[in-house]
Image (tube, rainbow, N blue to C red; front, side):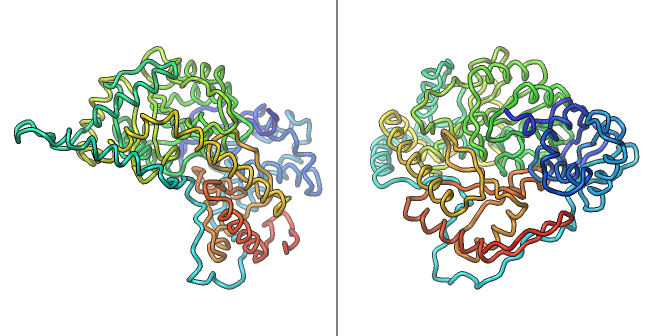
Length: 508
């Protein structure tokens, strides 16, 4: 992996926090790694190029907001520059709001709260009769016929859950889930190399229900929780609502740097870490078998609970064999796995699950009683019917998404040659680098043009990733054609400048 885009390691607890996010220092060595290509930045003098390189790393989430930068003298020695050059770069960053001086904390990275919109949108509001294409949701629709057979099978099975006299009739509340579905989920894990019993499965209201339930049960105010940056926005919300202090572990589409992730875990010793190694949302990165072994080893030494989100694990799109679950390398029961049918089949079912030790499953079932009692039994029976035919149903779904991925890639290449993204081998979305910090305003302009976008800043803890958007390929090809046309109209309506770093030409 290019050393200029690696994770940030060598971090330790710091004395300050903002917005529930625990901050940390960056060593001179690691910052120099991140700045390996700073001299190639087209921004004028040496100090301006260095400032531009640091600013770009902050905007792209490689340097967390609130991180303490090295002292000027030490950083200058590492880069073999004069201290005057580094001082001028730090001063430039401070003038533009990307660096602040804090007593006892040195120079700390920031995201300017009063930063003006980088792009300004013009043009007419979309015709109210135009149907919005919603690319903010990376979830597929249910293809015709997919749910009908499963629903018919569920209705056929339903009387067996209703029969009996009043004293023995099924009341419909199953806090841990319907037994048949729990067994099917357990059997799938066993076939993947992770022996599992039905008692280790808790059915939840979608994967989000699983994340929220685990956060409520395992985290308390001021506990430390690690999660990737970028990551699934609702995971950020769920963990933040507990009052836990959040620590970001940056990850890019080029892949994980597990050694530096291990350093992050070792530096803060979190109670919980939430990670998405299976076609990471939003970057699409997939962690291989060796990396999973190292991840489990690192968690064993540093982390009380490692929550692995496998929501997209059913969607390899290039025919590849998937690595085993991370929990297959668990030796002491600290790895918890989350799964869902929302991405594989249909989010409207709202069926997800937690795989954990039997005792924790019992505790979670008790905790959820104050939230939603149980998931809908009929939906669980539909989910069971789908899982019984999963080996038959999933291959054509994967082939469909692969075609849509390649179609959207061709469209974007033709219409937006300046954009960049890594082609994911699975999952449902591209993590697109727009080449400038314009994501929020592009989302605004897209709304006016009839296409809804998820701006990159929604996937970061502290407003990073303003230069990226997530673009899912879940829609049919004809709808993707229209969506890209509307994106082109939105781009044509934008005029922009880069605050503090000069002007950028108008895009026509």
